[in-house]
Image 1 (cartoon, rainbow, N blue to C red):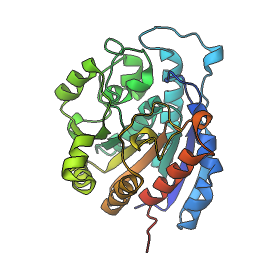
Image 2 (cartoon, one colour):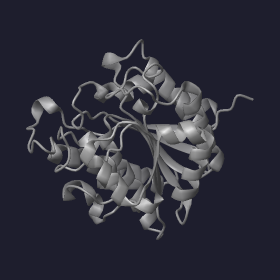
Image 3 (cartoon, rainbow, N blue to C red):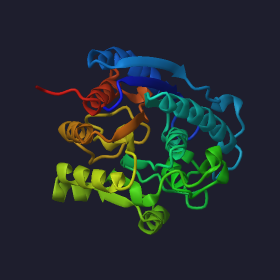
Length: 304
């Protein structure tokens, strides 16, 4: 990493998901000794605590096709401000989710940070799902299936225009890696958006190393670097059982580590988030432990 200071920010929100429990993800990752392990790599680690997140029990659902929209917008605005402030202080924001809708706030904060110096942000999105739905196309109305669309300017204005600007990221500088579960209407959004999508078939045919290197080249072209948004469901459920929406056929343990190691080698990652850890359905915190291992690889831990 170009910076030596990491700012950890918890985003314990599960308003965007259909299954409860991912709000405990930040605690599970901290319990797996994330802070201490990052410090062992030589980083100065500052844990900023958790952003205030509304609770479903005390919140009206609102629109059925965009559930908890107003509450998610409020929480993402708070997260945006924390991320932007940390980046402005030359710290690397490391966000712990929560469901994947927290990415709307993280990406907005990093985009705002770079916009001040007239630079652009790239984005690598590693996920089993495209997260490219809109309220009109979503079969569930759950906003954790919409954050990538919102970040490239497609979706409710409350989410696309956090901080007053849209889009937060140019689709030409976005790469989705590990796709294997995409809704029918969502396919059209992915095809028409102009972003770069790599499915599990691409990983099988080309190999992960080739895909990751190609993605890094595309997202870093003309940008100040890239944000890494890592959904733990990108890893196969045999290795990461405690996730919000598990899908068979994901990356292996070693493929996930190779992806993180290759991203680290590039020296271009500006920020990172790990989302969708669900301790309620996990096995003795196994998924959070893997999440911490992957963060360590992304931050520079080596075998030798």
